[in-house]
Length: 223
Image (cartoon, rainbow, N blue to C red):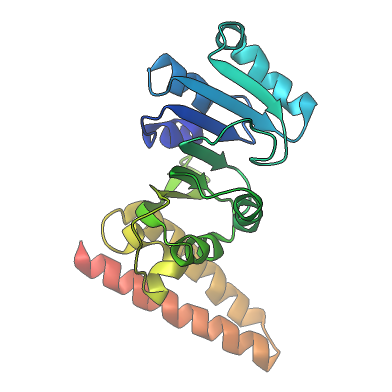
């Protein structure tokens, strides 16, 4: 199990029916079942070949009827609603498309690879309550950064523009991986400014540079 998957597992919630959409090797489902966090689970992937990796890992649970593999696109094809749904490793826009075709789960855990801001906006517009929204990292020498969004379908939420762009808990609670990421992006933005010749490109980079400097300063002062 990778650092990334272990971090996702740590955010798991107890559920009656769990679904792992785009399940890859099925480690999260294995964690849920072994720790008694759900009564039954669905592992789903659009590719039957990819799904076989998780089926191999979860063979005993599948034989016992506690885990049901489904070749499906997103939540499509699952025979019942699931009260806790994980979607990890897809882009934010892809996750939105999955939810638009199906439903917003009672409890959700999303780990978008990109377009986190769009996903946050979509969830808040749908009336969701976001419980956790932060960045975590994997690796030491060459860090990889991931956003994690945990919440409920109901309850409503109010986000500021800055929270939409950067993640609420990164600004007031879980700052360190985010600070590393923001400082790395600021360094790259400064390097791009040295090469940018077109006025439009420089204007956008300068705007991002200012925003990053402001956020980094605010977070550091709050520590």
